Length: 222
Length: 228
Image (cartoon, rainbow over the protein chains, first blue to last red):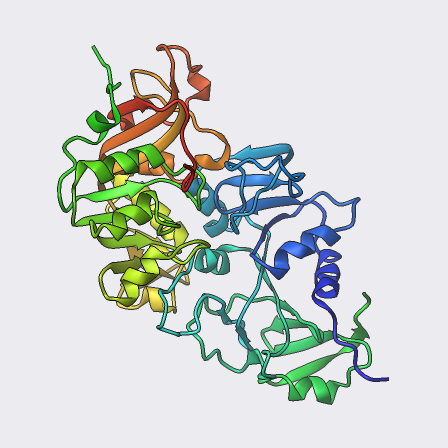
């Protein structure tokens, strides 16, 4: 059977299943925000936003957006019962002080040692911007990256060492891509799951660092 | 008698000098003190250093100040947000300086300034470009970067309720940087949607105690950035 890479939605669905009940979670802009839609309904997860919110709920109904209730991506949100609002310094104390259980982030590159590059490609034709990415990388108790396995041109995004400027060193714990679920361990990258029909050799060819297939690996269930 | 209420937006920004470091609250469009910034545009101070999370959008308020050539330098964490054009134009023409600071460090530097802390060690930016040139210290086996306080000459913030002692509440997540910036400036200037009598804000509901505040002007119908 030919390999069937996951769609973005399927990656989000796969990650949503892994977010534990009772976790305090910060979602990065883009693909990570989709994962919240797929957390099983019997779990209660508290979503944190860097601009001072815990307990973010779903997007507001059209026409009811409140300009003073936005997330890190500047999109309007609603609040769940139990939500709290606080100032920026406290929001980042939660991040930097290790109180956020899980940060879900996108990335340009992840290295075999867990280095994360997701803020800059070094392109100097426009001004650099970093936001809260470095704080999240350094501070969150667990960091999971959601991304495509390769660039549009087919270059690997998982590398021995990042070539782009680092966001944080050695922080990534797990990588979810359209091809695999990979743990970053002391002993290197361990493949836990592969997309349906994908052969390990094929996966390794698309990865710029050595991979080890876990003994108990499985096909990604979507 | 203590009365921090000023009668007009012009009075609120009077005396801000050329070369001032101006802390401007807001995250994206939320909590931007539009009327105070417009008053600063009218007031004329130039050669400013503006400290704010994003570097403006469109051609209004902060972007307008920059477009008029009044801003020498921006200290911010994310200058490229949606709708931002003026900053990019000035930056590529070499007409504005940028000090890029991770958002949490930006906030904590201002808190340190307000709280009398001389410097602090943060794990953020260790091993990255934004940690280059800074002292790194290993404390209990973990590396940290030394960061210095960031103090403002003036803070411009947007509040919900205020009283004549300068006690403040904020509306929803428009709060964001305001409480920290209020502490970190020599002169803290507030536009409040409504000024209430002393005692009108229950003590437990005060978010920024008036000790940090210097001037309050009532702006009952505050505009969102870019709104006509």
